[in-house]
Image 1 (cartoon, one colour):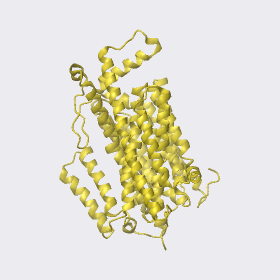
Image 2: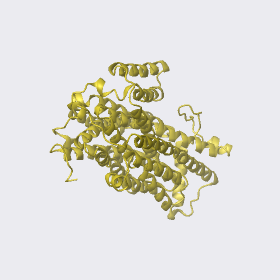
Image 3: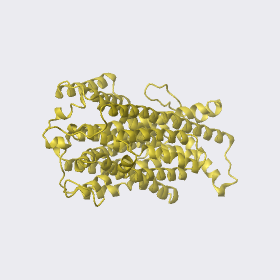
Image 4: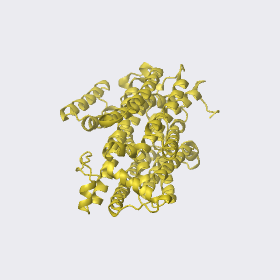
Length: 523
């Protein structure tokens, strides 16, 4: 990256600083994914509860990045970086002491704060890189976000070495994300930062929000309403009041702007991106570790994340040599992700899992940063706002729909698979039903009992434990859990299929208007 063209001398340092901040976020997320099963066993959480905890990180990210995107051009990027740094440290202070009856609250709140820190930092990093490299935004945003899978790789290695090999507790593993946190804080310290094109031209907030308008705000209001209802359990009247007020405020300050239908479609698609990419990432170590072994699950997670990391440096090469626009690239990615998830649902060996998950990783590699690049290219007058809302929508949909939805699916399908044996089902059924959106309540498997069965099955597969064979009931419970995992991935594959249909329609639209091109604010 030494030859990176820039508009100011410290552009390279700022790119590295933003990358390390996102690296810390990815590392923390990967470690949480690796210790998820341990939390379920230690604290007796259901899959739905675990999904809600991980989802809190995505929800917190949404609030951090949306609020940060609205104010970053006003208060300055440096102040927001300081807020992100403090929140990253505070998250560790809340999470690491978790124990006993208050463990769920501590883990949920700590993860929520961690998400807010990540969102606040990215509210700076995305518009910063888009401003530093205006000639090729999708390429450099992909480079910036290559640090996310790099963090996933490092977090996976931390779990593999410190957890599986050295058998250190989850607190030691989780605390390691503070190392890149300190480094990004030092890199950002006292650095001069540019302003976005919209900010340089002195556009007011109402003008910057016109492309978002009422249509875009509808998506944000719906997701915020879902958070208030499901996460905070507020009465419906409060939910409607908050969501309605948000719509009214945007309508007033934009003077009734409906907004861009294209940006509305991109927002809807980004909700699917967050669900299939981040929602799946949160569960994939748990699922593949159950289908194969815990250690193999971590190795597969590292391998697929490394694939994403390498591919995100090649987006310009791919677009140039394959003659693809950013939308055409996303169409191909959606098809690959659909195929990869479908194949992963039927894996029986490590080799087959590696092929399936690399296909999935190649598919999802370009989703997030390329969506940000398209938004920045087509809607420059929104400044930091539209790309911040875009990231917020992806994160909150992962937190409220992706992770809890996949957790619900695991509970429902595993419970249904065990119902054939009424006695076993009564013994291993979770005490509380799992609920998700408007779907009917479903009973999954007791987290603590399932953890014991999985540990016994893992011991039985080890060479030194040939005489330790699981009982028939244990094999039946384990089989039900595996069935739940396979069906969950099979259903998950329909999301990138829907995304492919949307990208195809967008590709046709751009061809009809003369092709895809970046837009600039007219003088």
